[in-house]
Image (cartoon, rainbow, N blue to C red):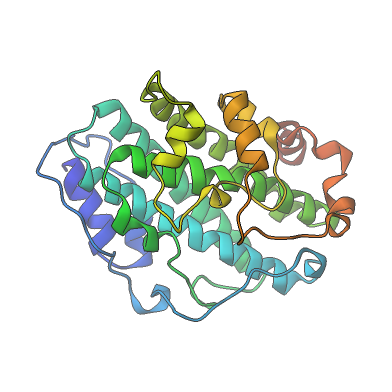
Length: 295
């Protein structure tokens, strides 16, 4: 099977099962003309919805059902990510092979994340599609014209923000004694470090000498999408250092705000974020899985 055929399969088949089919080991990388698919096909139970479905508040995660709904929210993001990396393989077939291989590696890991979320959601009594599925990520695709814009949107912004969200929610699940959900979010976190690092390596190699990496990043985004989307309401700068981001980029991202930025009261998060044993997520994950090689 050719890489373009596999990407089309993920986008056009429509079933949830098809979204989770891994690429064949003998995948052949081809370079056809660019194809920009406007939106993926989906079976009825995972169709996009215009209905809003807010993620439960942290203080409500003592309820198992609401922890399941939280994971449903994240599972939707993983499903969109699978589709978007398939979209990129079709939209930018002429870019360097190693970048396309990175997209495929990330896609495979996103499939793993979706499986992990769906398994844990099932334990908590909820199935994917039981709640409305938004298409926030796909709404941005019309302005993406280059692979650098795609990297800035998906790898540095959407996945970058997940570095913060996975830290917040792994702590929240731990706070309420749900080690199974905590383990899932920590596994996702460890993979997201790799994903953002792949994106940063490509992005930073393209920054010109007459522009800072922060200014270059901002130049790749199209309003109303802003750097606000590249972080959560609680920002963890150390994760961006692990990725390899420059101090200039980290400082500017941490300071960035616009009129849509969330105004959270820090005292709502203090008890959760101050859990000391979660200062090193990888060690905590090893503790949870007893060193069985999940990381």
